[in-house]
Image (cartoon, rainbow, N blue to C red; front, side, top):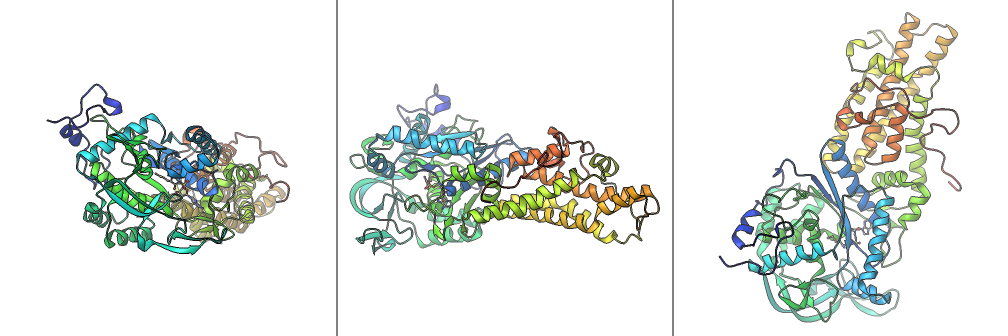
Length: 593
Ligand code: MSP
């Protein structure tokens, strides 16, 4: 059998030689692995796109990060092993030009850029398990290995390429996709991409091509078999129609004399590998590619969810699956594509300077508040306009007025004991209900009880559908409903009547009245406990504090515990709940708020 790659060996099984047949078989998994986990021990694998280091991050990048992090943390909450990958995209013409402009060599320029994104990830409390850089040695090996396989399998050929290249988008556009426009800042007439408005330049060169056109039917068949592959559905449709319209082969290298900053074609140092082929492979590199036999899934591949912005759909949902099919690797199980943040209704983009610095926003409003705002208001289907006034409004209405207020009313209320209410009613035993058929509020209380019983499953359903925004809004609606219920039931009226020794309507004894009051408190406390558990992925620090306020044990904070009546042991606060700001979950915003 002819050796596939003479000098190259996969990372994790260096001592063995590699032949085409055994490698081919070892990684052979049908594309349609979508819903079957090849290996039960495979971690749930979530990825963010990797960020270009040519300019500072903005809140659009923060959004992609937080969205991915919430999806990962939800799986942890559900007791699964889950991992998150983020990182930086450091090669290509764009970075080469940006570093030259900054008067720096590319590598130190990238080091600086990568550090900023690492700092952002840490500042946003991202629970990433990996931070990959495409300049990492392991990644270079993985890309070279993939190139060899693609070449070996006949998917790469060399030919002359003529076309319009956008450095900013790092992509070629066909003639039909470019037009002449007046560049607003300079008044120059330039050729630009119709889709992105970015300037393109004519290039004519010999380079390597990938036989993308050969994958049209396979891709269409895959999409047809996996109609839920991309969320939202509109994006799935866009991809299907783009592929149906036809695919041209893809230029996957540039002459090294033009593009020096990148991974060289292993067999031809005169050519540098196209940055998108290089970049997409990062998702596999971080999962340990090239894998040793038997280790194909240990690092997480295939990814369970890949989160991307809508602008990079084509690269991820057409090119990437075609590369994977060509490599005979399983495809990611799902994509979540999100819409963009705008500022003043204009796209937020570093190229135009119309951006919000995420570090300032995190400092100003706090990490949890920003995470809440990003998830609550961030667009999946439609763009969302970023506005400090909205952040303040969400804080005041949702966090302070909704969640914080409910927590404060329940845990700092004087006329009852949360612990006593839990002791009385935990276990969700219907026979314990402290009111009979004749009780005036029976219907309202039962209805509210049903809402508390059902809402964790509803939230989980939203998360399974990759709709964290809707999950959060539903959760907040339950908080608002709990505040309204509390207001309507006014347990403080019962408390003051009991204190004064007055009769309580619907109760035939003081003990009976106290049980009625405690039941209302219990249901609201349960809303807080279940919400606290389910908010952990969104607001890790605030959710922890809320659960501490309720005295929920550390090992009772998983999704299995998020059921009405599931925890009988909580109710003694683990933090001081005094007067004033002591024990306040969401303090008033400072200064100009
Ligand atoms: N390097 C590529 C991705 C390669 S993945 C193999 C890239 N980088 S980027 O830095 O330009 O963008 C990273 C992510 O940020 C993308 O998902 C992009 O959609 C997202 N966003 C960029 N601007 C955005 C907004 N204004 N709003 C929300 N997300 C935005 O593309």
